[in-house]
Length: 203
Image (tube, rainbow, N blue to C red; front, side, top):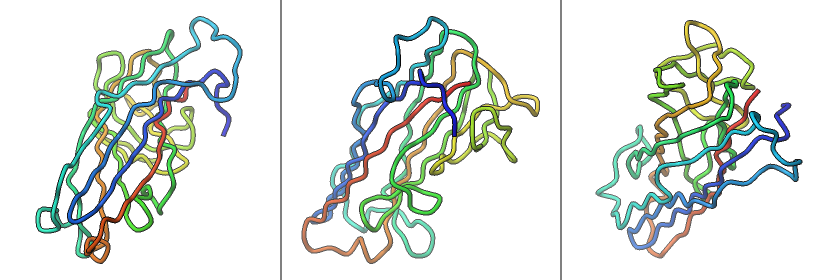
């Protein structure tokens, strides 16, 4: 996939832990960095991404307080945060999450998964549909009010059946960590850790 060498990304880490019925999921901010060592930014070609909350803490949870996630898994409960992107000029924007893959979700330690969705998107103050595509310049095969963030792909805004450009993009990010039933039966502290990076890519 070709991306702008001057693209920016905002790093976030997911640090869950389970011990004696204690779950902790932290989404920790590590600031904004650039990929590689690009030359100084050219005015009008830089986008920046930010998240509303640096941490999501589930505190102490017993298995009985978790929510059923399908027939054979438990969810810690969905949490939401706000994602914002600001660009100096209108561009085609794509949002990507770089993290260890687990099928169409992301790994949550060695046994669990984290599902991530983007919803309630706005571009330059107007509501837009979103869909999952290979690049910011590719029209998604399907789109709607929300779309999953899946490994190796981007979520892009769609309006009027086509791709759109803009300089201000915002959306809610829904995070849903879950474990298989067997993994929730623990006697000792069992740490889970996954590192992920939200990125904004533009064309």
